[in-house]
Length: 350
Ligand code: SAH
Ligand code: SF4
Image 1 (cartoon, rainbow, N blue to C red):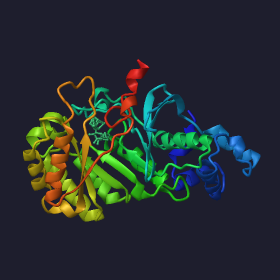
Image 2: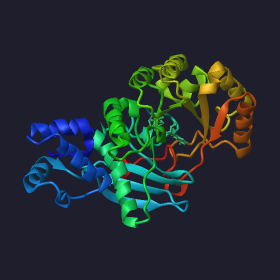
Image 3: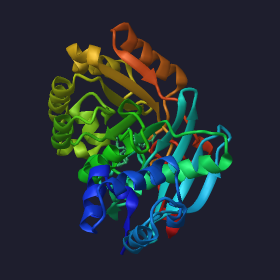
Image 4: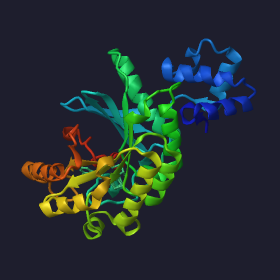
């Protein structure tokens, strides 16, 4: 099968093209066509001579993702369903914010972590996405924006779609390198956020390579007892291990970390839980941001309900009063099942 041109960093593409007898600068030219001029056909790359153009077409493809369906929410959120070359379907979400346009990308077909509140976890992982399939999700959304001719650019990326990014570490890291390169899509590292369910060993690795992007950790409970009940990954990586990894990350990168916390009614939303969370954060508070997430009900997980809005605000107040940086996640696209934890593309295929 031909490879997608979107799976290579500039350096990797230079080497690959050199292997085909091309000069290294050819890769810069190709990247310009891919990411700046956004060519969707080789024939559009008019300043590349015919012989080289043919060589590219013989070895590479420009699109390995095809739009299958697209749904638009009343709040402007758009959920794209893309078909991969092996017919698997994945979901990508475009969200409009005051600060810009963000794309939520999928990293795996399904997810093996199986958190008890998440729709993606209902689907056993079928396979990892390649770097190009991750980058192409953003490109496809950008092509969509280009066609609308409002001169809009994807400005932010959140790696929070289907899958556990750190269970597909190499491809996700490579994709981030491609996405943030100023010669390519040029999405600044500080506008890219990766969320993990807390694979502590990979958090260490991520700290070591320091891509200068934001890291968010799905904590969701302040004690092992409770976290173990709602996230079975806690058996492999206890809160202590996760917090050790957090400390390592903070020490290595000196960047703030986000702790995500879904509020589940009467499960983890009491004042006592907020106090336990404050104690757990302890003197890391100046480098920590807690993101409170309203639970999006998932039909199969009837044991959970969304916390009352007053409970959410009270939880927020308790954290704030103790000097914890805290925010409440705004919801996007709930009417089209495009909100956090609601993505479940593979079922549509059945
Ligand atoms: N696998 C990664 C990233 C994808 S999930 C992770 O777990 O962090 C992105 C975020 O959505 C996570 O914080 C996850 O816990 C949250 N989430 C999952 N199901 C949800 C639901 N039903 N309602 C609200 N948030 C949910
Ligand atoms: Fe996987 Fe994240 Fe969903 Fe857990 S919350 S099942 S890790 S996608």
